[in-house]
Length: 164
Image 1 (cartoon, rainbow, N blue to C red):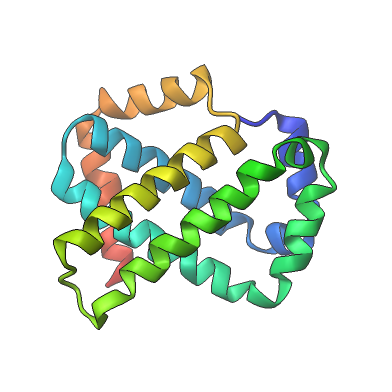
Image 2 (cartoon, helix red, strand yellow):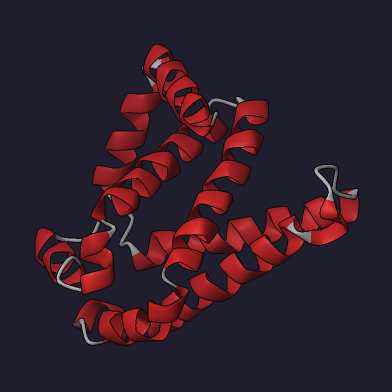
């Protein structure tokens, strides 16, 4: 988990600050996704993973005009400058997932396309974990979710209810 001082610097970036609620929501959904995967609730995981990337894509589209500036601002923060490769790896994996999800123009993707999306999503998660300095605090948060399946149920229901 990134230190408070790094988060403070990140939230000084105007686009991030304006969208702080979305950043927090995406973070919560990410933890929920990991918890769902670990508890082998794969159908919910698969559905929520699509929602997560669609939310991320909507978030990115909203800031498309600010994208280069936002990346440049992130790279001014020493943590992100040191982990620049992971930042670009994250962006590339995200782009591949979104491209794959848009293929075939339908909800039912071929097995081959789904395998590519799964690999690209895994690359995204690995890059995100490295970039976000995933650590024991993150594990504690995920384990707390895993030990509270009722809370996971509520969170999943609330996310899907918000989409209706």
